[in-house]
Amino acid sequence: MPETPPTYRYLQSHEWHNLQGDSVTIGITQFAADELTDVTYLDLPKVGTKVKANQRFGEIESVKTTSDLISGVSGTVTAVNDALAKTPGLVNSDPYAGGWMIKIKADDPAEVGKLLSAEDYLKKTGH
Amino acid sequence: MLKRTPFYDFHVSAGGKLVDYAGWEMPLLYRSVNDEHEQTRKSGSIFDVSHMGRLHFSGKDAKEFLSRVVTRNIADQKVGQSRYSLVCNDAGGVLDDVIVSRDMKNWLMVCNAANREKLVKHFTDVRRSSGLDFDMADQTESTAMVALQGPKIIDRVAGILPVDVKAMKRYHFETSSFMLVKFTVFRSGYTGEDGVEVILPAKMAGMAIKALASGIDKPDATVKPAGLAARDTLRLEAGMPLYGHELSETLDPLSANLGWAVDLTKEFIGVAPLREIAKTGPKRKLVGLELEGRRIARQGTPIVLDGNIVGEVTSGTFGPTLQKSIAMAYVDANHAAEGTQLAADLKGTLNPARIVKLPFYKRQ
Image 1 (cartoon, rainbow over the protein chains, first blue to last red):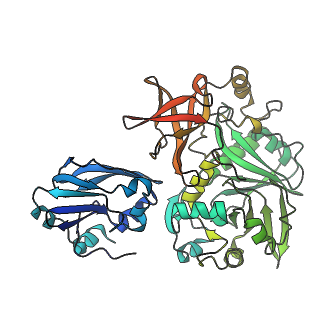
Image 2 (spheres, each protein chain N blue to C red; image 1 turned 90 degrees about the horizontal axis):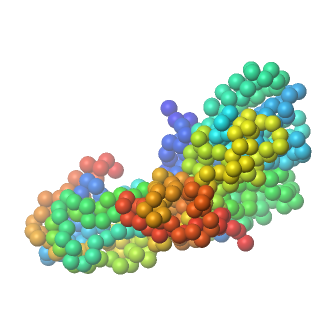
Image 3 (cartoon, rainbow over the protein chains, first blue to last red; image 1 turned 90 degrees about the vertical axis):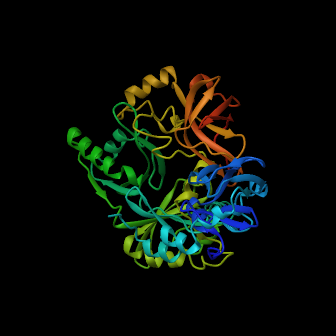
Protein backbone atom coordinates (compact mmCIF):
# COMPACT_ATOMS: atom_id res chain seq x y z
CA MET A 1 0.00 0.00 0.00
CA PRO A 2 1.48 3.42 -0.89
CA GLU A 3 2.26 5.73 1.98
CA THR A 4 -0.33 8.34 2.95
CA PRO A 5 1.34 11.47 1.46
CA PRO A 6 2.64 13.50 4.43
CA THR A 7 2.23 16.88 2.68
CA TYR A 8 -1.47 16.34 1.83
CA ARG A 9 -4.35 17.33 4.14
CA TYR A 10 -7.31 15.06 4.90
CA LEU A 11 -10.93 14.78 5.94
CA GLN A 12 -12.10 12.05 8.24
CA SER A 13 -14.36 10.98 5.35
CA HIS A 14 -11.10 9.97 3.54
CA GLU A 15 -10.67 12.75 0.94
CA TRP A 16 -7.13 14.09 0.46
CA HIS A 17 -6.28 17.71 -0.49
CA ASN A 18 -3.05 18.78 -2.17
CA LEU A 19 -2.50 22.55 -2.09
CA GLN A 20 -0.28 24.17 -4.73
CA GLY A 21 -0.52 27.97 -4.79
CA ASP A 22 -4.26 28.59 -4.52
CA SER A 23 -5.14 25.38 -6.37
CA VAL A 24 -6.32 22.36 -4.37
CA THR A 25 -6.39 18.88 -5.95
CA ILE A 26 -8.82 16.42 -4.30
CA GLY A 27 -9.03 12.64 -4.32
CA ILE A 28 -9.64 9.80 -1.87
CA THR A 29 -7.15 7.79 0.17
CA GLN A 30 -5.97 4.27 -0.55
CA PHE A 31 -7.77 3.11 2.58
CA ALA A 32 -11.08 4.47 1.25
CA ALA A 33 -10.47 3.03 -2.21
CA ASP A 34 -9.76 -0.39 -0.69
CA GLU A 35 -12.90 -0.19 1.45
CA LEU A 36 -15.05 0.71 -1.57
CA THR A 37 -13.50 -2.11 -3.67
CA ASP A 38 -13.37 -1.68 -7.47
CA VAL A 39 -14.68 1.76 -8.41
CA THR A 40 -17.11 1.58 -11.33
CA TYR A 41 -18.41 5.15 -11.72
CA LEU A 42 -17.80 8.72 -10.56
CA ASP A 43 -20.26 11.58 -10.69
CA LEU A 44 -18.05 14.70 -10.69
CA PRO A 45 -18.99 18.41 -11.02
CA LYS A 46 -18.34 20.44 -14.18
CA VAL A 47 -15.60 23.07 -14.46
CA GLY A 48 -16.94 26.33 -13.02
CA THR A 49 -19.09 24.70 -10.33
CA LYS A 50 -18.87 26.32 -6.88
CA VAL A 51 -17.97 23.89 -4.11
CA LYS A 52 -18.52 24.51 -0.41
CA ALA A 53 -16.35 23.30 2.45
CA ASN A 54 -17.63 20.12 4.11
CA GLN A 55 -20.29 19.64 1.49
CA ARG A 56 -20.82 17.03 -1.16
CA PHE A 57 -19.23 17.72 -4.56
CA GLY A 58 -19.88 14.37 -6.17
CA GLU A 59 -20.52 10.67 -5.81
CA ILE A 60 -18.39 7.56 -6.14
CA GLU A 61 -19.76 4.14 -6.94
CA SER A 62 -18.17 0.72 -6.59
CA VAL A 63 -19.24 -2.88 -6.94
CA LYS A 64 -20.00 -2.75 -3.23
CA THR A 65 -21.58 0.63 -2.51
CA THR A 66 -22.25 4.26 -3.41
CA SER A 67 -20.70 7.05 -1.39
CA ASP A 68 -20.65 10.88 -1.31
CA LEU A 69 -17.48 12.83 -2.06
CA ILE A 70 -16.82 15.77 0.27
CA SER A 71 -14.56 18.78 -0.20
CA GLY A 72 -12.68 20.21 2.79
CA VAL A 73 -12.46 23.67 1.22
CA SER A 74 -14.68 26.19 -0.60
CA GLY A 75 -13.84 27.29 -4.12
CA THR A 76 -14.50 26.92 -7.84
CA VAL A 77 -13.79 23.79 -9.87
CA THR A 78 -11.05 24.49 -12.44
CA ALA A 79 -10.37 20.96 -13.70
CA VAL A 80 -11.93 17.51 -13.63
CA ASN A 81 -10.04 14.25 -14.20
CA ASP A 82 -11.67 13.05 -17.44
CA ALA A 83 -9.62 9.84 -17.42
CA LEU A 84 -11.83 8.52 -14.61
CA ALA A 85 -14.87 8.39 -16.90
CA LYS A 86 -13.24 5.60 -18.92
CA THR A 87 -10.93 4.18 -16.26
CA PRO A 88 -12.53 4.62 -12.82
CA GLY A 89 -10.18 1.88 -11.56
CA LEU A 90 -7.41 4.53 -11.40
CA VAL A 91 -8.91 5.51 -8.05
CA ASN A 92 -8.01 2.00 -6.78
CA SER A 93 -4.67 1.57 -8.50
CA ASP A 94 -3.22 5.08 -8.15
CA PRO A 95 -5.34 7.01 -5.62
CA TYR A 96 -2.81 9.77 -4.81
CA ALA A 97 -1.81 10.67 -8.39
CA GLY A 98 -3.61 9.29 -11.47
CA GLY A 99 -6.81 8.85 -9.45
CA TRP A 100 -7.23 12.55 -8.59
CA MET A 101 -10.81 13.80 -9.05
CA ILE A 102 -11.07 17.60 -9.19
CA LYS A 103 -8.97 20.74 -8.87
CA ILE A 104 -10.43 23.73 -7.05
CA LYS A 105 -9.35 27.38 -6.99
CA ALA A 106 -9.68 27.88 -3.24
CA ASP A 107 -11.54 30.96 -1.93
CA ASP A 108 -9.20 30.89 1.05
CA PRO A 109 -6.15 28.60 0.61
CA ALA A 110 -5.50 28.85 4.37
CA GLU A 111 -8.59 26.61 4.86
CA VAL A 112 -6.50 23.65 3.71
CA GLY A 113 -4.12 24.03 6.65
CA LYS A 114 -7.03 23.52 9.05
CA LEU A 115 -7.72 20.02 7.70
CA LEU A 116 -6.21 16.88 9.25
CA SER A 117 -2.52 16.14 8.81
CA ALA A 118 -1.61 12.69 7.49
CA GLU A 119 -0.67 11.63 11.01
CA ASP A 120 -3.95 12.86 12.53
CA TYR A 121 -5.96 11.31 9.68
CA LEU A 122 -4.38 7.91 10.33
CA LYS A 123 -4.98 8.27 14.07
CA LYS A 124 -8.61 9.37 13.70
CA THR A 125 -9.52 6.67 11.20
CA GLY A 126 -7.64 4.00 13.13
CA HIS A 127 -5.62 2.32 10.41
CA MET B 1 -19.37 -15.19 17.60
CA LEU B 2 -18.87 -15.78 13.88
CA LYS B 3 -18.31 -19.30 12.62
CA ARG B 4 -15.10 -20.06 10.77
CA THR B 5 -14.76 -22.54 7.93
CA PRO B 6 -11.90 -25.09 7.84
CA PHE B 7 -10.20 -22.75 5.34
CA TYR B 8 -10.05 -19.79 7.72
CA ASP B 9 -6.25 -19.95 8.12
CA PHE B 10 -5.88 -20.09 4.36
CA HIS B 11 -8.01 -16.94 3.92
CA VAL B 12 -5.89 -15.06 6.41
CA SER B 13 -2.59 -16.18 4.88
CA ALA B 14 -3.84 -15.34 1.35
CA GLY B 15 -4.71 -11.79 2.44
CA GLY B 16 -8.48 -12.23 2.36
CA LYS B 17 -10.62 -9.32 3.55
CA LEU B 18 -12.98 -11.11 5.93
CA VAL B 19 -16.62 -10.13 6.49
CA ASP B 20 -19.69 -11.51 8.26
CA TYR B 21 -21.74 -13.48 5.77
CA ALA B 22 -24.79 -15.29 7.20
CA GLY B 23 -22.95 -15.71 10.51
CA TRP B 24 -19.72 -16.96 8.91
CA GLU B 25 -16.42 -15.13 8.70
CA MET B 26 -15.89 -15.28 4.93
CA PRO B 27 -13.51 -13.64 2.43
CA LEU B 28 -15.18 -10.78 0.54
CA LEU B 29 -12.11 -10.49 -1.67
CA TYR B 30 -8.37 -11.19 -1.68
CA ARG B 31 -7.04 -8.81 -4.37
CA SER B 32 -9.82 -6.98 -6.23
CA VAL B 33 -13.28 -7.94 -7.43
CA ASN B 34 -12.47 -7.28 -11.10
CA ASP B 35 -9.22 -9.22 -10.93
CA GLU B 36 -10.84 -12.24 -9.25
CA HIS B 37 -13.82 -12.10 -11.64
CA GLU B 38 -11.61 -12.03 -14.77
CA GLN B 39 -9.30 -14.71 -13.36
CA THR B 40 -12.38 -16.96 -13.11
CA ARG B 41 -13.57 -16.18 -16.66
CA LYS B 42 -10.12 -16.62 -18.26
CA SER B 43 -8.38 -19.27 -16.17
CA GLY B 44 -9.60 -20.48 -12.78
CA SER B 45 -10.47 -19.60 -9.19
CA ILE B 46 -10.95 -21.44 -5.94
CA PHE B 47 -13.86 -20.37 -3.72
CA ASP B 48 -14.50 -21.50 -0.16
CA VAL B 49 -18.18 -22.47 -0.06
CA SER B 50 -17.99 -24.39 3.22
CA HIS B 51 -20.58 -22.04 4.73
CA MET B 52 -23.28 -23.60 2.55
CA GLY B 53 -25.45 -26.18 4.32
CA ARG B 54 -24.91 -29.90 3.67
CA LEU B 55 -27.80 -32.08 4.83
CA HIS B 56 -27.85 -35.86 4.40
CA PHE B 57 -31.03 -37.91 4.25
CA SER B 58 -31.15 -41.68 4.58
CA GLY B 59 -33.56 -44.42 5.59
CA LYS B 60 -36.72 -46.06 4.30
CA ASP B 61 -38.76 -42.96 3.43
CA ALA B 62 -35.96 -40.53 2.53
CA LYS B 63 -36.92 -40.43 -1.14
CA GLU B 64 -40.61 -39.95 -0.47
CA PHE B 65 -39.85 -37.21 2.04
CA LEU B 66 -37.62 -35.32 -0.41
CA SER B 67 -40.22 -35.66 -3.12
CA ARG B 68 -42.69 -33.91 -0.80
CA VAL B 69 -40.45 -30.99 0.12
CA VAL B 70 -38.78 -30.15 -3.21
CA THR B 71 -40.42 -28.83 -6.40
CA ARG B 72 -38.40 -30.95 -8.81
CA ASN B 73 -39.26 -34.46 -9.83
CA ILE B 74 -36.72 -36.75 -8.16
CA ALA B 75 -38.48 -40.06 -8.89
CA ASP B 76 -36.36 -40.69 -11.98
CA GLN B 77 -33.16 -39.19 -10.56
CA LYS B 78 -30.29 -41.64 -10.96
CA VAL B 79 -27.46 -42.39 -8.55
CA GLY B 80 -24.67 -39.92 -9.31
CA GLN B 81 -27.02 -37.15 -10.49
CA SER B 82 -27.57 -33.72 -8.96
CA ARG B 83 -30.61 -31.52 -9.55
CA TYR B 84 -31.32 -27.88 -8.80
CA SER B 85 -34.63 -27.48 -6.98
CA LEU B 86 -36.69 -25.22 -4.75
CA VAL B 87 -38.10 -25.84 -1.29
CA CYS B 88 -41.44 -24.03 -0.96
CA ASN B 89 -43.77 -23.08 1.85
CA ASP B 90 -47.53 -23.81 1.81
CA ALA B 91 -48.16 -20.59 -0.13
CA GLY B 92 -45.70 -21.54 -2.87
CA GLY B 93 -43.11 -19.00 -1.64
CA VAL B 94 -39.47 -20.05 -1.75
CA LEU B 95 -37.89 -21.20 1.53
CA ASP B 96 -34.63 -21.92 -0.26
CA ASP B 97 -33.04 -22.99 -3.52
CA VAL B 98 -31.03 -26.18 -3.18
CA ILE B 99 -29.15 -28.87 -5.06
CA VAL B 100 -30.28 -32.42 -4.37
CA SER B 101 -27.87 -35.25 -5.16
CA ARG B 102 -28.59 -38.96 -5.08
CA ASP B 103 -25.88 -41.25 -3.75
CA MET B 104 -25.91 -45.06 -3.46
CA LYS B 105 -27.65 -45.02 -0.08
CA ASN B 106 -28.17 -41.38 0.80
CA TRP B 107 -29.49 -38.15 -0.55
CA LEU B 108 -27.52 -34.95 -0.11
CA MET B 109 -29.00 -31.48 -0.12
CA VAL B 110 -26.77 -28.40 -0.43
CA CYS B 111 -28.59 -25.29 0.77
CA ASN B 112 -27.85 -21.63 1.46
CA ALA B 113 -25.98 -20.82 4.67
CA ALA B 114 -28.59 -18.28 5.78
CA ASN B 115 -31.41 -20.82 5.34
CA ARG B 116 -29.88 -23.93 6.91
CA GLU B 117 -31.47 -23.64 10.36
CA LYS B 118 -34.81 -22.68 8.86
CA LEU B 119 -34.76 -25.74 6.57
CA VAL B 120 -33.75 -28.13 9.36
CA LYS B 121 -36.71 -26.88 11.39
CA HIS B 122 -39.06 -27.13 8.39
CA PHE B 123 -37.93 -30.68 7.62
CA THR B 124 -38.24 -31.69 11.28
CA ASP B 125 -41.81 -30.33 11.33
CA VAL B 126 -42.68 -32.20 8.12
CA ARG B 127 -41.21 -35.42 9.51
CA ARG B 128 -43.34 -35.07 12.66
CA SER B 129 -46.59 -34.30 10.85
CA SER B 130 -46.11 -36.87 8.06
CA GLY B 131 -44.79 -39.76 10.16
CA LEU B 132 -42.28 -40.55 7.40
CA ASP B 133 -39.31 -42.66 8.54
CA PHE B 134 -35.91 -41.23 7.64
CA ASP B 135 -32.73 -39.82 9.19
CA MET B 136 -31.50 -36.30 8.63
CA ALA B 137 -27.86 -35.49 9.40
CA ASP B 138 -26.46 -31.98 9.21
CA GLN B 139 -22.86 -32.45 8.05
CA THR B 140 -22.14 -28.79 7.37
CA GLU B 141 -19.62 -28.34 10.15
CA SER B 142 -17.93 -31.73 9.91
CA THR B 143 -17.12 -31.23 6.22
CA ALA B 144 -15.58 -28.55 4.01
CA MET B 145 -16.58 -27.52 0.50
CA VAL B 146 -14.72 -25.68 -2.25
CA ALA B 147 -15.73 -24.57 -5.72
CA LEU B 148 -13.09 -24.60 -8.46
CA GLN B 149 -14.37 -22.63 -11.43
CA GLY B 150 -13.00 -21.49 -14.78
CA PRO B 151 -12.12 -22.72 -18.29
CA LYS B 152 -8.76 -24.20 -17.20
CA ILE B 153 -10.06 -25.93 -14.07
CA ILE B 154 -10.97 -29.35 -15.48
CA ASP B 155 -7.48 -29.89 -16.95
CA ARG B 156 -5.89 -28.55 -13.79
CA VAL B 157 -7.77 -30.77 -11.34
CA ALA B 158 -7.84 -33.89 -13.55
CA GLY B 159 -4.39 -34.82 -12.29
CA ILE B 160 -5.14 -34.06 -8.65
CA LEU B 161 -8.63 -35.34 -7.87
CA PRO B 162 -9.18 -39.09 -7.53
CA VAL B 163 -12.07 -39.18 -10.03
CA ASP B 164 -12.27 -38.88 -13.82
CA VAL B 165 -13.60 -35.31 -13.99
CA LYS B 166 -13.09 -35.08 -17.75
CA ALA B 167 -15.59 -37.88 -18.31
CA MET B 168 -18.04 -36.50 -15.77
CA LYS B 169 -21.16 -34.82 -17.16
CA ARG B 170 -22.49 -31.55 -15.83
CA TYR B 171 -24.73 -31.95 -12.78
CA HIS B 172 -23.22 -35.34 -12.04
CA PHE B 173 -20.99 -36.32 -9.16
CA GLU B 174 -18.76 -39.08 -7.89
CA THR B 175 -17.45 -40.08 -4.48
CA SER B 176 -13.99 -41.53 -4.15
CA SER B 177 -11.26 -42.08 -1.60
CA PHE B 178 -7.80 -40.65 -1.89
CA MET B 179 -5.27 -41.49 0.82
CA LEU B 180 -8.17 -42.61 3.05
CA VAL B 181 -9.94 -39.28 2.60
CA LYS B 182 -13.45 -39.34 1.17
CA PHE B 183 -13.98 -36.75 -1.57
CA THR B 184 -17.24 -36.03 -3.37
CA VAL B 185 -16.71 -34.20 -6.65
CA PHE B 186 -19.58 -32.47 -8.45
CA ARG B 187 -19.41 -31.01 -11.96
CA SER B 188 -21.32 -27.86 -11.08
CA GLY B 189 -20.94 -24.27 -9.95
CA TYR B 190 -22.36 -20.80 -9.61
CA THR B 191 -20.22 -18.66 -11.92
CA GLY B 192 -21.31 -19.42 -15.49
CA GLU B 193 -18.02 -21.27 -16.04
CA ASP B 194 -17.20 -24.96 -16.16
CA GLY B 195 -15.73 -26.44 -13.00
CA VAL B 196 -16.21 -28.64 -9.98
CA GLU B 197 -17.37 -28.40 -6.40
CA VAL B 198 -15.72 -30.70 -3.88
CA ILE B 199 -16.87 -31.85 -0.44
CA LEU B 200 -14.27 -33.34 1.90
CA PRO B 201 -13.82 -33.96 5.64
CA ALA B 202 -13.20 -30.72 7.55
CA LYS B 203 -9.95 -31.98 9.06
CA MET B 204 -8.48 -32.60 5.61
CA ALA B 205 -9.15 -29.08 4.37
CA GLY B 206 -5.64 -27.82 5.12
CA MET B 207 -4.01 -30.63 3.20
CA ALA B 208 -6.44 -30.36 0.30
CA ILE B 209 -5.98 -26.64 -0.17
CA LYS B 210 -2.23 -27.18 -0.47
CA ALA B 211 -2.77 -29.66 -3.29
CA LEU B 212 -5.56 -27.75 -5.06
CA ALA B 213 -4.11 -24.28 -4.71
CA SER B 214 -0.37 -24.86 -5.02
CA GLY B 215 1.40 -21.86 -6.52
CA ILE B 216 -1.60 -19.56 -6.16
CA ASP B 217 0.61 -16.70 -5.03
CA LYS B 218 2.39 -16.56 -8.40
CA PRO B 219 1.10 -13.73 -10.63
CA ASP B 220 0.43 -16.09 -13.57
CA ALA B 221 -1.09 -18.90 -11.48
CA THR B 222 -3.78 -20.96 -13.23
CA VAL B 223 -5.89 -20.99 -10.08
CA LYS B 224 -6.16 -18.12 -7.59
CA PRO B 225 -8.49 -17.62 -4.63
CA ALA B 226 -11.66 -15.58 -5.20
CA GLY B 227 -14.08 -14.16 -2.65
CA LEU B 228 -17.79 -13.61 -2.23
CA ALA B 229 -17.82 -10.29 -4.11
CA ALA B 230 -16.56 -11.91 -7.31
CA ARG B 231 -18.88 -14.86 -6.75
CA ASP B 232 -21.75 -12.36 -6.81
CA THR B 233 -20.68 -10.48 -9.98
CA LEU B 234 -20.02 -13.84 -11.72
CA ARG B 235 -23.41 -15.34 -10.84
CA LEU B 236 -25.19 -12.12 -11.78
CA GLU B 237 -23.58 -12.00 -15.25
CA ALA B 238 -24.59 -15.67 -15.58
CA GLY B 239 -28.20 -14.73 -14.70
CA MET B 240 -28.35 -17.03 -11.66
CA PRO B 241 -30.71 -16.16 -8.80
CA LEU B 242 -29.46 -15.46 -5.27
CA TYR B 243 -31.66 -16.16 -2.27
CA GLY B 244 -32.58 -12.92 -0.49
CA HIS B 245 -32.49 -11.08 -3.82
CA GLU B 246 -34.33 -12.89 -6.62
CA LEU B 247 -35.87 -15.47 -4.28
CA SER B 248 -37.68 -15.13 -0.97
CA GLU B 249 -40.57 -16.57 1.02
CA THR B 250 -42.96 -14.08 -0.63
CA LEU B 251 -41.76 -14.78 -4.18
CA ASP B 252 -42.67 -17.91 -6.12
CA PRO B 253 -40.42 -19.92 -8.45
CA LEU B 254 -42.66 -19.47 -11.52
CA SER B 255 -42.31 -15.68 -11.43
CA ALA B 256 -38.55 -16.22 -11.04
CA ASN B 257 -38.36 -18.10 -14.39
CA LEU B 258 -37.66 -21.33 -12.52
CA GLY B 259 -40.65 -23.24 -13.92
CA TRP B 260 -38.20 -25.78 -15.37
CA ALA B 261 -37.36 -26.81 -11.79
CA VAL B 262 -41.01 -27.16 -10.74
CA ASP B 263 -42.97 -30.32 -11.54
CA LEU B 264 -46.65 -29.39 -11.16
CA THR B 265 -47.77 -32.97 -11.94
CA LYS B 266 -46.48 -34.34 -8.62
CA GLU B 267 -47.59 -33.55 -5.06
CA PHE B 268 -45.31 -31.37 -2.95
CA ILE B 269 -45.65 -28.64 -0.34
CA GLY B 270 -46.81 -25.47 -2.08
CA VAL B 271 -48.01 -27.14 -5.28
CA ALA B 272 -51.64 -25.94 -5.10
CA PRO B 273 -50.93 -22.18 -5.17
CA LEU B 274 -48.26 -22.73 -7.83
CA ARG B 275 -50.82 -24.52 -10.05
CA GLU B 276 -53.06 -21.45 -9.72
CA ILE B 277 -50.21 -19.13 -10.72
CA ALA B 278 -49.40 -21.38 -13.66
CA LYS B 279 -53.02 -21.15 -14.87
CA THR B 280 -53.16 -17.36 -15.01
CA GLY B 281 -49.46 -16.69 -15.49
CA PRO B 282 -47.33 -14.76 -12.97
CA LYS B 283 -48.27 -11.14 -12.28
CA ARG B 284 -44.63 -10.14 -12.17
CA LYS B 285 -41.68 -11.66 -13.93
CA LEU B 286 -37.97 -11.70 -13.27
CA VAL B 287 -36.15 -9.99 -16.16
CA GLY B 288 -32.63 -8.92 -17.06
CA LEU B 289 -31.95 -5.21 -17.51
CA GLU B 290 -29.12 -3.48 -19.28
CA LEU B 291 -28.65 0.12 -18.10
CA GLU B 292 -27.21 2.94 -20.15
CA GLY B 293 -23.97 4.31 -18.69
CA ARG B 294 -21.99 3.01 -15.76
CA ARG B 295 -24.33 3.61 -12.81
CA ILE B 296 -25.46 0.63 -10.78
CA ALA B 297 -29.12 -0.04 -9.96
CA ARG B 298 -28.95 -1.80 -6.61
CA GLN B 299 -31.53 -3.97 -4.82
CA GLY B 300 -34.72 -1.98 -4.18
CA THR B 301 -34.26 0.50 -7.06
CA PRO B 302 -37.70 1.28 -8.56
CA ILE B 303 -38.24 0.51 -12.26
CA VAL B 304 -40.34 3.13 -13.99
CA LEU B 305 -42.38 3.39 -17.20
CA ASP B 306 -44.19 6.62 -18.14
CA GLY B 307 -43.97 7.90 -14.57
CA ASN B 308 -45.41 4.72 -13.03
CA ILE B 309 -43.46 2.22 -10.97
CA VAL B 310 -43.70 -1.11 -12.81
CA GLY B 311 -40.98 -3.06 -11.05
CA GLU B 312 -38.10 -3.30 -8.60
CA VAL B 313 -34.46 -4.29 -8.89
CA THR B 314 -33.34 -7.39 -6.97
CA SER B 315 -29.61 -7.36 -7.87
CA GLY B 316 -27.42 -5.00 -9.85
CA THR B 317 -23.76 -4.53 -10.63
CA PHE B 318 -21.32 -3.30 -13.22
CA GLY B 319 -20.47 -6.53 -15.04
CA PRO B 320 -16.67 -6.82 -15.13
CA THR B 321 -16.65 -9.11 -18.20
CA LEU B 322 -19.50 -7.40 -20.05
CA GLN B 323 -18.35 -3.88 -19.08
CA LYS B 324 -22.02 -2.95 -18.76
CA SER B 325 -24.31 -1.98 -15.93
CA ILE B 326 -26.68 -4.94 -15.48
CA ALA B 327 -29.52 -5.77 -13.12
CA MET B 328 -32.21 -8.32 -12.45
CA ALA B 329 -35.65 -7.00 -11.56
CA TYR B 330 -39.23 -8.11 -11.06
CA VAL B 331 -41.37 -6.25 -13.60
CA ASP B 332 -45.17 -6.30 -14.16
CA ALA B 333 -45.83 -9.15 -16.60
CA ASN B 334 -47.41 -6.85 -19.23
CA HIS B 335 -44.18 -4.81 -19.42
CA ALA B 336 -41.76 -7.72 -19.17
CA ALA B 337 -41.13 -8.44 -22.86
CA GLU B 338 -37.57 -8.47 -24.17
CA GLY B 339 -36.55 -5.14 -25.69
CA THR B 340 -38.98 -3.06 -23.56
CA GLN B 341 -37.49 0.34 -22.73
CA LEU B 342 -37.83 1.16 -19.02
CA ALA B 343 -35.93 3.38 -16.60
CA ALA B 344 -34.22 2.79 -13.26
CA ASP B 345 -34.97 5.52 -10.71
CA LEU B 346 -31.50 6.20 -9.26
CA LYS B 347 -32.31 8.55 -6.39
CA GLY B 348 -34.52 10.72 -8.61
CA THR B 349 -32.49 10.43 -11.82
CA LEU B 350 -34.17 8.27 -14.44
CA ASN B 351 -31.51 6.07 -16.05
CA PRO B 352 -32.63 4.28 -19.25
CA ALA B 353 -32.81 0.49 -18.85
CA ARG B 354 -33.75 -2.06 -21.50
CA ILE B 355 -35.04 -5.59 -20.91
CA VAL B 356 -32.56 -8.11 -22.32
CA LYS B 357 -32.42 -11.88 -22.50
CA LEU B 358 -30.99 -13.79 -19.53
CA PRO B 359 -28.28 -14.87 -18.96
CA PHE B 360 -26.29 -11.71 -19.63
CA TYR B 361 -23.19 -13.84 -20.12
CA LYS B 362 -22.79 -17.30 -21.61
CA ARG B 363 -19.45 -19.05 -21.89
CA GLN B 364 -18.21 -19.95 -25.39
